[in-house]
Every structure is written in C-alpha cells, then in structure tokens.
Image (cartoon, rainbow, N blue to C red; front, top):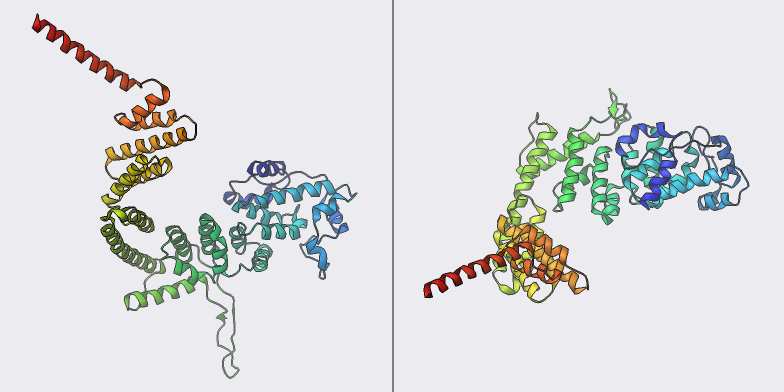
Length: 456
C-alpha cells in the first residue's frame, strides 16, 4: 500500500508544489503532491457539477442549499459513466486522495487538508472531507493542527471536520487515538502545539500519567502551553455589568491557553504544597517544580511495590509472576533501578524452559535476563543462550538453526551449548572446537612420548 501511495504522489508532482511549501517540514515522509493537468479548474468543476457533486465556487464558497443526497454520491462511480473528457483526470485525482487516506499515515491527513485549499484542487474539498473522516482516527493529528492554521478558512474547515467526527472534545480525541499508542501520543502533542484552550486541564492531568509514553507527550504539550510561542491576544469589547452599565474599559472575551495553564499551576501548587504561588514565579518554573515533585513521589510509591514483589519472588512458585510484575513497574519510571534478582529469576526460568524443550519461551526469558542484568559477562552468555533457543525452535519446525548457533558463538565463544549445537547442525566442529581438540591430542601425544622414554 505504501509504495502505491508514493507512486501516486510522485505522479501528482508539478503544478501543485507551491501549495505544500509551508508544510514541507511536517510532511517529510510524503513528497509534494502536484502535477500538470490537461483540464482547467473550471472544466473540472463543470464535470463534477454535472454528476451532482457539491463543488465550491472560485472563492471556496459552497451552495447555500446543496442537494441533500449529494453527500451519499460516489464521485468516482458517477464519473466513470460520464462522457465528459475531464472525467478521467478527475478520477485520477480522486484515486490519489483515496490512496492517501487508506495509507493511514498521519502526514497524509495534512496533505489532504492542504489539497482542500489549493487553487488547483479546492474543487475536491467536499470529497476530501469524506476521506479525512473515513481515515479517522489517523486524521486527528492533521485536523487538530489545522485548527490553528494561519488560513482562517482552513482552521474553520478543520474544526468542522472534527465536529462531524465528534472529536472536538480533547478527551474524546485522545480516547479515539488509543488504538495506536504512538498515534495517541501524537494527538496529545498536537493539542498542545495547536493551542487548544479546551485541552489545558486534560493535558495537565496527563502530565502525571503512569503510562510513560502518555506522560512524555503530555509534558511536551504542556511546555508548549507555558513556554512556547505566546498566544494571540483574545479579542476585547465592553462588557455589560449588573444593572446595565458597561465596563469602563474593553475586556478580553476569553482567557488564552497560557492564562488557563497558569491558573492550573496555581491550583496545583496550592493543593500539592499548601502554599500560595510566588507572584513573580514563571509558569515554566512552577511546572518544573511540580514535575520534579510528581516524579519523586511516583518513584517512592513504585519502589514500595518493587520491594513487595521482590519479597514474593523468594517463593519458587511465585518467582516468575513477581519478575513480570517487577518489569511492568520498572517500565513506568526510569528512576527505578532493576534489582539483580530480576535477571536471575528470568535466567532460571529460561533454563527451565530449555530443559522442557519450550524453545520460544526460553528465548524470550533469556532475552529478558540479558536486558535486566548489569554483569557484562552474563549479558553475553544470556544473549548467546537466547540465540541457541531460537536455533532449537527453527530445528523443531524443520529448518536449520546453524545461523542462530553461529551468532551465539560470536557473542560468547566459550558457550559450550552453542558450540555443540553448531557442530551437530553443520556436521562439523567449528574452528574453536577443532583447535581445542588438536590441543588436547597434542598434549596426549607429549605425555605418551614422555612415558615411553621413562619406561625405556
């Protein structure tokens, strides 16, 4: 699918390049979609209108009363039966858009959004909206970013598409992106960089999440709120006071995302430290103080759980469960140190799986033992054992494990199980084993000669 997308995008590469110049840095994975067309915008607009498609005019305005059934129209199917000479060229454009949406690449959504506002392709804006909604949740990052676009029409269009998807609420957008952890993190970051005011309390709550990926993304988004480019000032007007009087000066109609973030910080300082926020403290400094406190508290809390599971690991029947729970706890906090017992538990479990000829499980646990040990010699030994187990698994399925055994010997030349397995797989000893055998034979001959001379 990815190769087809790239092929279409490369075909689309001449008259549309300027449209994506401003977005090129964010869409590095997709070339600029552009190509020279045989038919003008007016000709293609007429061909689309003839089959009942909703098409904006030269200024991007849609008809005041569009056909109610137009939203259900399959543009490509309708054009396939059209005799208009521009129809094949339009179908090619529509196919490109469909392939971009089907790719489920986050960057593809930005490309489609930009296409909807370029002079050559704005006539497809209605269909582009359907493609963007159809590729959700993978279009959410592009749409959220679009809500803060310099082009006011594009920003309104992106907001409208999010509304159609019922994803304007930041909580709903983040929940919808949970199908892919990387996508969810991207959505969280996009909310911060787009300056979403509604997302301020949501992002703040996630900055102390137990999920490391969510926590990191939320903290990046939060720093965009408190230390990124300053927000645009809110519009001002005279407000009506009780009694009908107006304020003496114009007042902002709403708080900016930075003002909302500062309010959240003041509340968190009061709740966490039971003290008032220093008047001259910057939002960034307050953020760093709170993050440090959250991290220390999390490490202390998780350390208690680590100690509890280490105690349970002393029981033979609970060792493996304890090791897996310990691994999960370590994954929540980089400040925790892996206890030596963890690597030992995994190594013992792996050895037991080897003896039971459960090769995949043995390979997995040897890899974990290598990941959690700090002894360099043991790391090499566990990695070698991991490859021996993989080789055994290959042999069990009727294949040769020679390559895996060779890798094991390379990692740990002294690992006897790897050398034996290699010799058996190839029908010949490896060089180290051959030299060792020659050495033993040489020593034996020397002893024999010396004994013979003594007797003589």
